[in-house]
Image 1 (cartoon, rainbow over the protein chains, first blue to last red):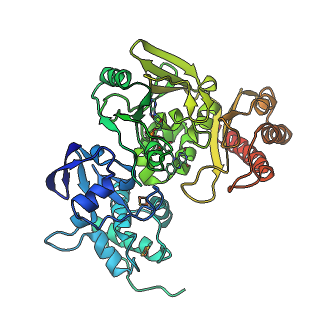
Image 2: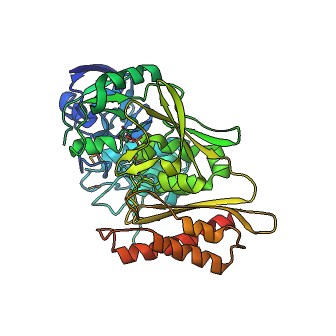
Image 3: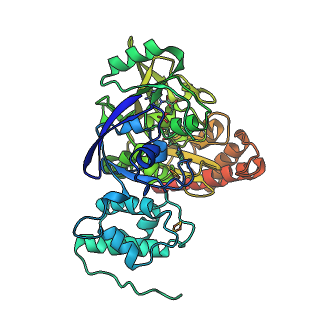
Length: 166
Length: 287
Ligand SMILES: Cc1cc2nc3c(=O)[nH]c(=O)nc-3n(C[C@H](O)[C@H](O)[C@H](O)COP(=O)(O)OP(=O)(O)OC[C@H]3O[C@@H](n4cnc5c(N)ncnc54)[C@H](O)[C@@H]3O)c2cc1C
Ligand code: FES
Ligand code: FES
């Protein structure tokens, strides 16, 4: 057993884990933060995506002990007292989810994407979320949600949230 | 899925890592990006009893040109390659390849050293490194040795890196004048390993005669494969359509793909032919 010290959503934690404990299990089972999902458990779907020192990562493919000294953000850390994070607002306003299973991972991945590229093209967004699978939406509204969040974060004019019928 | 139990150590210096590797013996494994090793441990294809995590050792992550070489530190992440100004400007083949390696989250962790040290012909860097004529620096308590990429891969998951050693740097002859590079792999979907992949480097003299060629193939042979006859068909030629078609045909004949879920042997050979031709043309267009 090993002690792991890290910050999660701004809060310092010390957790005792086995070396083989996966980060996603520590987050879900030991910290009871179940917003980080397990979809495939084989590094493919992105449902378990978190930010670790600002980098999006699949927490089913990291060991909990690797989090030592790091700063983690999960979906639980996005909203503040002032309200929703722009990415959450984007998903809400644009119907960026149906069942919502992929949504936490999508949002955390999108945050890193927008940090590196505040005004991405549709193509860049689609490549940027290529490690996250959604079985419901068909991705179009996820792309719009990320464009909306990008505009909001840059302080640009918000794109229309009217649904498009094609 | 959870790996079998193991002890975990995270040294802060290379020397400490060597000491731990020696102490733990044969059953120890190095943990770099972990994006090949951890999935294998979860599936219990690998069950090391000790993990030596080299992520805290400073000085192993860099991309620089020095002394006529492009030097890539073993712990350089795929994402670092993708974002490097030097790579964007001169080493187009890495821009082609990294974009096709897994997905953004995996590229945030997977390292270039680990991609090669894993010793898997399905990985993309081995063929790229072959095309570029890379050398691999391997460090141990007794010093450093350099191995040509052609002598690096031994068998399935086995490389020139011996127990107790650490791969520390990849060196590539700096891309000079009139040189073009390109990589492409056919994949079923984003994040998939190659159905077939081809890496190409060509250099010409001022009159347009090919003076140097490197061609590496991904996932169509038990080991990463250098397409020797294809290279020979290009060197000394004027890179006419006919020369290129010949080189592509040789690559298709000389690889050894197997039937699997990604396609039949026949299909893969044909894809090697098509992609080799396209990548030679793409590399030429970048000269
Ligand atoms: C979903 C998914 C899709 C992927 N798709 C692709 C793809 O399309 N193309 C591709 O090329 N790869 C792909 N990969 C593999 C990925 O690129 C890995 O990151 C890479 O193969 C290994 O690098 P790593 O740093 O993660 O190594 P690790 O997993 O940490 O290590 C791999 C092996 O190499 C050894 N090792 C690592 N570093 C060193 C070193 N410095 N010295 C000595 N030994 C060392 C380890 O002991 C281990 O045996 C994919 C991975 C995933 C999870
Ligand atoms: S659960 Fe981690 S990638 Fe699917
Ligand atoms: S909303 Fe259901 S998987 Fe994406």
